[in-house]
Image 1: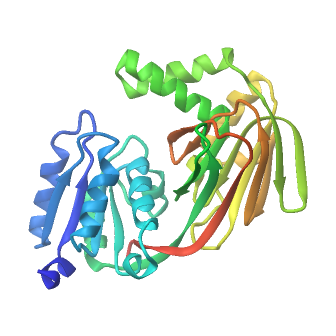
Image 2 (image 1 turned 90 degrees about the vertical axis):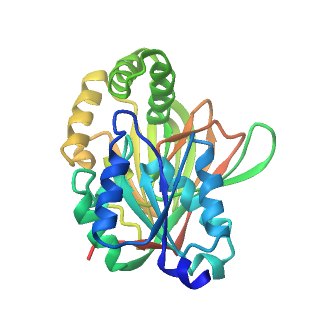
Length: 309
């Protein structure tokens, strides 16, 4: 049984609205490549960690997430709960199938090219990647930590995530909820009083949003790479609405750091001493508002990730 599982993939399938046929397509491609695999399907966001833990406990050495950044984040957090000896025996892969697939896109995995993705995964080329970690205290006074592959957003972007979640429950459509939430941000708080320590610098002023990225950070930390043991930080001070629109255009076109309101840093640790009322998002999922100060660090080369040939 253990020998068989060493060669079988455990695939976590996270369904996406409007993509009901994607599973059948993936299975066809896997069968054509003679891949041995077992599928498990998540019923909800909360079930992802439970299912990944089940795959780990049952001895699968190749775990592939067929989902987006949030599902991949859950898988990483499951792996980081394991002892190093267990984690080092497992390779994590991704078949992009989410609302946001930024980490997959960084490695050139495309949702539109399943065949290429599977061909790369079959070659089982592994690279150890870094993960970021935010350590914080929740509103119940519990000491918590959450790992991330992409980024932590603090302030306006996390606020948009929250608005998007609320508007999506009303409108149903992801695209419509994003448009509405982006427009609504104009009428929301546009800056937050933050006190942040980065390297030898201390920033103690109003900040619109801050992104701390171990990876590409949805375009906000475009120079970050998940294997150099560093975190990239983009901090945006208060700016006018028209400058925000210009910033969104630079974000879409990959030139975000060229915006005059963006202040970039590179560091191994960020200490957020104070960020009153600022929501926090981790890899696209809302974390909430931590109680008191919190730290963001990076752990080097701790996850085996399947990369392209």
